[in-house]
Image (cartoon, rainbow, N blue to C red; front, side, top):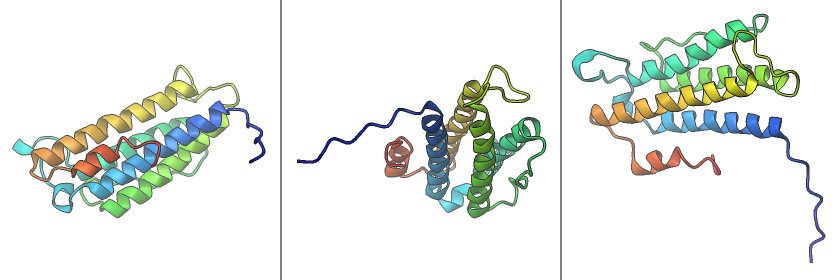
Length: 164
């Protein structure tokens, strides 16, 4: 019989940061799952963003927040939606996620303030998660509209937060 393990206290900060890390891994999973011909396929009618430019937009909005919230920190490079590859997008999304994670890690256990964002760090995290999820939905829809839908396993895989 195994001895009972002492339960560690639940850390809200660690749990929120882990959720944000999972969100980033879901973004990476999605980008890998996008069929290559869909990456730059123009939306019907030629209006709107390509999938590549949506990935760049997610990253570049993160940079906008970093400029406000972490003025003294070095910023990752901006991502050009017209020329970026999937590898570029994944690399820079990981950099902007790490930079925002540092902002959240500094704010969440303290007074919860995020420079340039109201109401607080929890609201900021919710904003970041919602923004990424909104564009993941757009990416999945656009891939289907341009004739290269995500595989069923990729579509369901974006919801496997417990294993990502």
